[in-house]
Image (cartoon, rainbow, N blue to C red; front, side, top):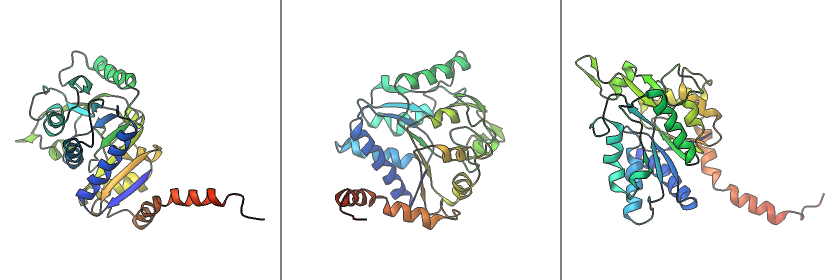
Length: 272
C-alpha cells in the first residue's frame, strides 16, 4: 500500500494520470475499471488531454464501469453509464465494443452479475481500478458490513450515500438499489488507485489506512492489496497520524533506482 499526499486536487489527479499513462506505455491494451462521481473527474479530464495531444491512444483500451443504479436506463442522465459516456468516452477513441457496463435493467440479476465477472476474466482482469471513497469508507457501492470477499451483486443504497449523490428528492430515495463490483472483485485488480479529496473524507482515509481491517470500513481491505495507491490531497490526509512518514517515503521513492545502481557498481569491491 502506498500513501501519496499532494498539496491540492489538481496535483492529486496529475499523479494518477501520470501513473495510468506510464502503464499504458507498457501495455497499450490496458484494462481500466472506472468509478464515477466528482473525485475522479480531474483524472478523466487529464486522460482526455493526453488523447487530444496525441500522447495516448485508447483504441486498444478496455473499460469496465464500477457500478450502476438499478432501474435506470443507460441513457438516463443520472446513470453511471451516461456519466462515463459524457465525461470520458465521447472525448476519446475507445471502441464501443471495448466498453462494458452493468445494466440497470438486467433480465436476471444474478446471471448478469456473473456474466460481468466472466467478461473481466476473459480480458485478463482489470489492470488499474479507479476508486473514490465514501465518508463511511465505502468503495464502489460496497457499504459498511459488506463482505470483504464479495463479488458483483445487488446492494441496497444507504440514505447517506443517496444524499451524497443527490438522489433524495422530497424525502424519497430514487433509486433505492444498485449493482456494484464486489470487494473481492476489486481486490483482484492489478493496481487499485483510490482517490480522496476534501476534509470530509479525512476520517475515512485515516480509518482505511491506519485502522484495523474491518467490514465496517470497506476500504480498509486495501491494506492487503499488493499494489494499492491512496492518492489524497492535504485535506483528505489531515487526520493521518503518520503523514510526515508517508511524505518522506514518497519523496525518496525515485532515489531507489539510483541507489540500486550504485550497489551494483560497488558489488565485489567491498573487502571484509
